[in-house]
Structure formats: C-alpha cells, structure tokens
Amino acid sequence: MIDDRPTILRPSYDVVVAGGGPAGLSAALAAREAGAASVLVVDREPEAGGVLLQCIHSGFGLHHYGAELTGPEYAQRALHEALDHGVDVLTDAFVLDVRHDHELTLMSPRHGVTTLHARATVLAMGARERTGAAIRIPGDRPAGVFTAGSAQRLVNLHGVLPGRRVAILGSGDIGLIMARRLTLEGVEVVGVFELLPHPNGLTRNVVQCLHDFDIPLHLSTTVVGIHGRDRVDRVTVAPVDDQLQPVLGRAWDVPCDTLLVSVGLIPENELSQQLRLRIDPVTMGPVVSSAMETSRDGVFACGNVVHIHDLVDFVSAEAELAGRHAGRYATGLRPPDDNVRLQSAANVAYCVPHTVSTDREHVVYLRVRRRMEHCLLRLSTPDGRVVHERRLRYVVPPEMVNLRLRPALLERFHGDALLVEVVER
Amino acid sequence: MTSPSTDTYAYLCIGCPLGCRLELDESDGEILEVRGNSCKKGEEFARQEHADPRRVVTTTVALEGARWPRLPVKTAGTVPKALVRDVCRALAGVTVRAPVASGDVIVADVLGTGVDVVATRTVAAATEARAR
Image (cartoon, rainbow over all chains, first blue to last red; front, side, top):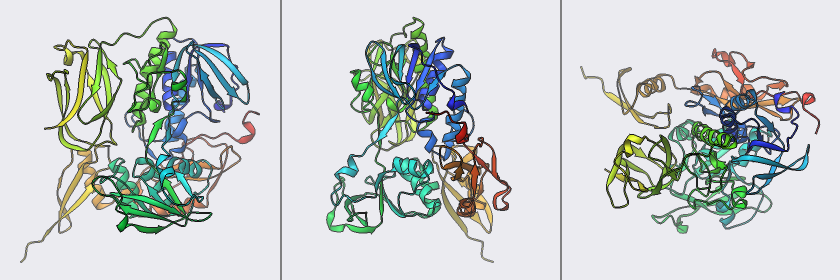
C-alpha cells in the first residue's frame, strides 16, 4: 500500500513539513505546486492523516472538496494528492528539534536519529487537548477519567470502550461527538455538563448528538468532585452562578464509571517554543504574517498549531498559503511584506493572520469572546475612524468568523494598524 | 364546524454551520409554512425532518488481518432516524478482512433501507506492511 513505500531520506530538502495531518499534507502539496523540488512530510503516527483518522463522523470537505466526507476519507484524499505530486511522506517519525538554521533532528525506528537540512520549514503539528480542568477537579484519583479525544482514539482506532456509564464535562464538539459515538456502541451516556449557559459546539452537533438520543445537556453546571477507589463510581456536579462559581449547596451526585473531559484544545507548540518564535498569548500559537510565515525567516505554520479551527476545510485553505510561500521561499523568493498590523478589540479574542497588506487579498479568521446577535464586524483606525463594516446575524465563540479583505476595502486607509472588533448594532 | 388547529414545530437546521432555528406550521396533516430558514436547503430540511427525519450513520466494524482492529464505515446515504441504533446493532456482528478499499460495500441494503454501508478508509493487509 502507498503508506508503506520505503522512504529514502535525503540529507536536505527544499521544504520539510512537521506533521502529516490535513494541514501538513495540504501545505506539502502547495509547496510542490509552487516549485519546490523536494518536499518531505514527517508524521509520528504509522499512517499520515492526523486527527482525521479518528474522526470517523461526516461533515468534512463541503467547502474544500465539494462533498460531505468522513475524516478518514478527507485524510486519504489529501494524502493521495500529496503523493501524486511527488511529496515524500515519512511516517513513524518524530521531529525532535528544529534549529533556527533549518536543521531538523528526526527520530524514527527505521532511520534512528537523523539530521536533515531544509530550505524552508512548515510547522503543522496540530493541537493537543487541555487537561487542566480534569487535573483541578477535587476528589479521588481513580481510573476512568479521559479526555474526550483520547477516548475517541481508543474507541475508533483501538476498538476499546473507555467505560460503560459515562459522564461528559464540556459541550465542545469532541464531547458532543463522543456522546453520540458511545451511545451507538451501547454505552450509557448519563449527561453532558457545560459550565457556560450555552452549548460550546456547533448547533448541528447538539441536535445530531444529544437531541437525537435524548442525552441530557446540563448548562451552567460543572463537575466539582470525582469519587471512587480504584475506578470512578460517581461524580459530583453543581450549578454555577453568574460568576461561573459552583453553588455547592445545590450539588448532586451522578453515578458513573467514566468521566470524559472536553474543555478545549491548544496548539502543540513544543517546536514553536524551541525555535523561540513569537507566540500569541491568546491563541497560544505562533504570530504569523499573511503568508503564514512566523517570526523566523523561512519558518511557516498552518492549521491547529497556529489556532484551533472548527472546519478542516479552512485548515486546508490556510495550509495552501503556508505551503505555497514555503515552496517559493525554497526557490529564493521571499514572501511579500505586510504593512498593516491587525489588533483584536471589542469582543474579538484573536485574529489570524496577525498582519496583512493593503495591496493583496486576504482571508482573516477571527473568534469572538462571547455570543452576540445582530452585530457588526468592524475595522477601524486606532483613533476611531471606521474603515469597513459588515453585518453579522449572530456570532458565537465556537464558530470562527471569516473576513475576506480586498484591497478596495482599504483604499482610503493609510495607517499601519487596524482594530478588528465585533459590536452590537 | 370548528376550524382545524395549527400546530407549530421547532427544529434546528443541521444543513450547515449556521444552525438556523426553524419553525414549521402544520394543520390537519398539511404543512402550511416554514419560517426562520436562511436558504432553500433549510426549508427542505424542515419539511424532511418533520415528515421523515433521516440521518447518515457513521460507526466502525471489526477488522481482521490489518494494523488496526477497527474499520470506519458509513451509510452511503441517509436512513430513517428511528433505525440508526438498529443499523449499528446490525453492524455489531460484522467482521471485515483486510485489504479493504474506501468505498467498498460492507453491507448492501442495510435493514432493507436501500442504502449500503461502505468502508471509509483504505486499509492494507498486515502482511503487506513493511517490516520495521
């Protein structure tokens, strides 16, 4: 099979991509199409595809491939496209280190510890799950507490159930998807508990994963205790007040043998930190230009390693940009400069990329801090002059907003910073 | 004669990430009006969901002779929502032997729905995998 072609490692490549999920594969394809003679994707799993391999549900690819695909199908298409365009894919290999002079150290069973040189590097290592919430919950430390994503991997790749009677903390998409997945495998899902007063995942997941199966969703509720000797035997939950503080006097016990925690993802940025890249403290990923270049020349980044995405289709679009510029960089063409800094203001948690230019077209991705209806997405100068406005029906934190910026919109703007905000009408 | 009463049903559209809140009015078995949709698909969804709610089912089946013990599968189209759990029960007894290609039919016409269950991942037989 294609995945198992032996890869002969060269001492140097035009572009090396760390991570073989949808971001890495799309970036590698774009790098080849942009003229890079040799492109290597390095992935730590036995097969490339990233987290998509465990996302067996559908809903991927509506924009990028014009079809409704499951995660593995999307991954397979991305992998085949890359391989068909002469990208080398090395699996079962771990990038240990990337130095500022583009020397990468890899570790793999097949090749041992090797160093390679790259003209340009693309970081596409994806994300990991937050575990802090689980660690901080008071009580015992029995077996039976998992992050929702690791439970997904256990069920879908290893054929192992995490438990028989499951409580889920967090109504993010992974928690909702697992509520359905476990129910379909005969597990009793006793409830989903969400700290905030509204669900954290896409509405269609609330419908298809909870409503369809009559799984209770307890909003404004959190887990305040885990109990059990060797194994979880119950969790204590409590409603929270306006300040999101638990009202312990109204706590109640939920018998269960498993707790899944689904409270968010953060970029996997060990390599980004080793490279001492400028990091955005809100996204926890590298600061990037409109070419998806980080603060180090020739080091690009894309996908969940930059900011956590909702739709893989936008990951592929962002990765194409990173890969194209990495490929061009490898042939001696520096990415064009940006001349405008984007600053997140009212109700905007962050925007990516962090800089843009007034002479090219860009897609800016942003996320709001809190839900708002009938609002305006506004670009203005720091002293308050409105440069562009767009009406939005509603915005919620779990759904990223895309802003298409064309040079025409910025014709009358001559500053070097633009405030990006979302305000009520 | 008393006039028939109109009932209003609420649905959340799953057609796209907007998730419009739909309202459908029905009287005496006839759908009168759909409100709240932002596009035609939303109106179609409300009507379909009201009359005959359907879903795509995704799950895994047992896999032998490969690196992984599970093969992800999906129904090639939607099946009646009421049959979703039955489809999964029907698949619980199925074992596939590698190699298998994405798109291969695993169970044809599952539970007489006219919809096939197909593999969504191409998996090599373990003996073809390169030695470490």
